[in-house]
Each structure stands twice: as C-alpha cells, then as structure tokens.
Length: 353
Length: 256
Image (cartoon, rainbow over all chains, first blue to last red):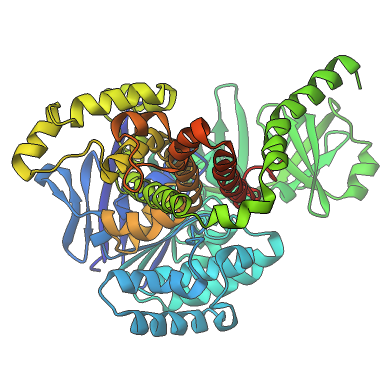
C-alpha cells in the first residue's frame, strides 16, 4: 500500500515530547484519538506546518514537507494540506462565500471564478442560501460546514480536522457528523481527524490511532480496538474494565496477591482481561453455582449512566459495574457498603499483552 | 448618596462644562455668518483640516507597521522601544517642537542634509506643520493599533496560511481587516490630537497665515486683538471636537 501521507513526527519541547508514526492512504480516514495533552493538536500543527518538527519527517505523495535532518521545510501556505480548525476560524469580515473563495483566490484564481467555485462548494454542503451571511450570522453547524467547504475547495491531498464537532451541541452534532461522514467518504485525499470523542472516531474513521503522552499506544480498526483495548484510557473510551496479568491456561493472575480471573480463552504469558461493566453482577452474599469469578468488594461511587447506575467498586481490583435501578433498590446500595461482585467466565475476554 | 461625593462631583461637572457653555454664550451670534465666511477663518480651517488629515495619513503609513512590529515581533529591547514611542505623549509639545527644530531645522542633523541634497526645508512650511502634528499625534495611533493587534486572534492568520496566503497577503487580507476598528479609532484620536496641536507647530513651523497658521494658532493670535474672532474660531474647533465625540460615542462612551 502506498501511503499518501507518510510521517514520523518528532516534536520535543522539554517537558513534552511527541514521537509518532502516521501513515494514511489516499481516501482513507484516520482518527487520532487521545486524552487532553496527549499531543493530538501538536501532531496536527506539525503536519500543517504551523509547528516545526524537531526530527523525523512529513512526506506527502513522496514529496518531503518537513525533514529537519535534510533542512527541508515547506511553509504552511505552500503545503497541499487543508485544515478545519476546532472553532472553525472563519474570517469574521468575509461572507461565507468569500471565506470559501479565499483559498482559490490565494492560488491565483480570479475573483469571479473563485466565487463560482465557492458557490459550488457551498451548494455541496447545502448552504447556498447562506452564501452572503457573515460568520456571526451562522449557527455552529453551518459554520462547521463553511469551514469544511473552505478547506475542501483547495482539493487538499491531506485534510486535517481538529475536533470538528466539539463546538456543537449534542443535537447538531448528530446531523453534522452524518453529513461530515458523507463528505469525508467523497474526499479523494487522505484525512486525519483529531478528536477526543470515541464516537466521532468510530463513526467517521476507517482506522484509529490512539496516542497517550505523545506515543502511539494502540492502532487498528474500530472492531479490534473496541474488542481488545490495550490501555486504561482505551478501555475507558470503549467502556470496558481492563486488567493486565499473567495467563496460565484459562486462569489469569492479576497482581501479586494471588487474585485470579477465570476466562474461556486459553493463553500463556502476559495477557489482558477485559469485560463489560454490565457483565458484573452484585450480590449481598457470596453467590454459588455457575462458573463465575466472585470476589468481595466495597462500593466507592454511584453515578447515573444512561438508564442504569454505574457503581465503582474497590477491592482486589477496581471495577465499574452497571446495574439497573431496580437491582440497586433491591440491594439497598450505599457508599462504603460491602458487596460481592461476580462475572461469568464467558463474559470475559483474554488476549495477549 | 453621600453629599461628600455628590458635591465635588457636581462641581467637577460644572468645571468641565461651564467654560464650554461660556464659549457658546459669549459667541457673537449676530455677526457669526459673516465672520465664518471671512477669508482668514476659512483659510485657517482648511489648513487645519488638511494638515491634520495629512498628518494622520503619515501616522497610518508609519505607525501601523510600527504597531505591528511592537505587537507581533519578539526582539530584544522591545519594551524600551515601546517606551520611546510613547514619549511624545508625555513630552510638552513645545519641547517636541524644539527637538524637531534641532533635527529637521536648516542646520539640524537631518535638516541640513535634506537642504543640501534636495534643497528641501521643513521648518516654517506647511509640510513642517504636518511633521510637527504627526510627531505629537502618532503615539495615539500606535497605542490603539498595537492594542488591537495584541487582542486579535493570531490563529486567523494561521488559518489564512493553511489556505495559501503568504505573510504579506495575510497581513493585508486578514490582519488589517480584523484590527480595522482599532485602526479607525486610533486614526480618529490621532486626527483630533493633530487638529488641536499648538506647541510643537508654533515652535517648528511658526505662525504664517495661509501656510502654517492652523486654527489653534489663529485662535491664539486673534485673542490679542479681536476677542470675538477668537471665540468664533474656538467655537468651530468645539463643534468639530463634539462631532468626533459623537462619531465615537458607540465605540467608547456608550460601552458601559
């Protein structure tokens, strides 16, 4: 596979360092996912040329854009890279139409043609009626679409989206996400989507790259990542309890104090075990019977979680458990109360670490 | 409301308003139309408006880039340069006039070179008036524009770069429009200051009717032999100032 984008981003800023590999094929949408401060925005800025690399390289269709070791540096304005910024940064003094026409104008297209192209792009994002409006007269969703049209109007080889839906309210986000997905599918170049929202990543991207503290911690398609998280952060993103231990057949030893979980996957050596919070059952007494993992735990937190309650448990392992309000009422749950937690072996998944 | 505050507040207000009211009350209203059309008055007014406008243009051409430099470029001694720029703001204008004379005068550092090379003299010419006014008024523009530039979001400039705009295009197409309100406000302040300029002008450019005698100078001269003429001239300046204030009302005075 020949990548459109081939990059090894190294940015060293004393207290923080970013060091990640990124490869994106033409037409592919990759989500760069990570917690705040992981280096997502730094990576995006380095690709756009708004920040220089300390080492490594950025190469697009075989042409170097930044390679400090060979003193190659193409400034932002000469890179075939489009950016949709988090708060869109539409020029407030220009109409929606002139915002979109801005790029073509800077690339030598005459005013009339640039405006005609801009009008076509606004039509594609369904904003023909809003062409003359100033950015302050646009809603958040409309501004996002103008920003997308503005970036796409230059047919960038690489499109960068910085938290494109973060500034929208939940309802607008749903519609805009669906529309964004359509435009990203049509975009022939490579796309990098920077986000901290796992839903955006899962819906919009073909592949996920997850970074923490400036390093890639996991990479793959949505199915793999949701099924087999490899860090606490990823497990939280996909809503799983995750533990690391040593597998010995269907038994996984967690920690040093002899606590074990029984699974149905046979493994040997370092392993992860994951299970859903809804797979955890709580009992006032130690349960007996079917093959289960059971252990005594203490309730450390109770929160609303959708229609259910999410119970945080301490004990030999920290666990999140989702139970129905009815079950909670039956148990008379209270903070600090001791309970028994149980997880069926068939509900757990073990995989090599 | 405590009387200890209300009393001085009222006195303060009267103190500011009374002289202006006096100007209006004492104005020779009956002869006003013909006094306004006297050639001397019109000449001084035209010269004042022309010089203040030219000085403002000069300040814009030199001051906006300087404000940009102070706001956007990191260099050693920036704080010092910023302090230097504001010196004319606190300097007595007469001192400014003397300083200008020493540098741009016929025997001055730059003046003698200008005279030898181009046969061009600044002092006691209309151009000299413009230079004196610009010297005194430029800090007003620079401070306003620098503040606007510092307040402007530089990420718009980054967005422009990602759309293919170079540094200069970004400056003209994005930065300038973004800070346009600040530039306009600075230019109006600058123009008003230039219009009222007296000390530096009379020192550097003299007081020749038709070439260097601006309104404030004419007022001063008229005061010696024709009080009514002085009042009329002052009234005109008052009207112009109030008009400026009205134009800026929404920007500053109304923003409580």
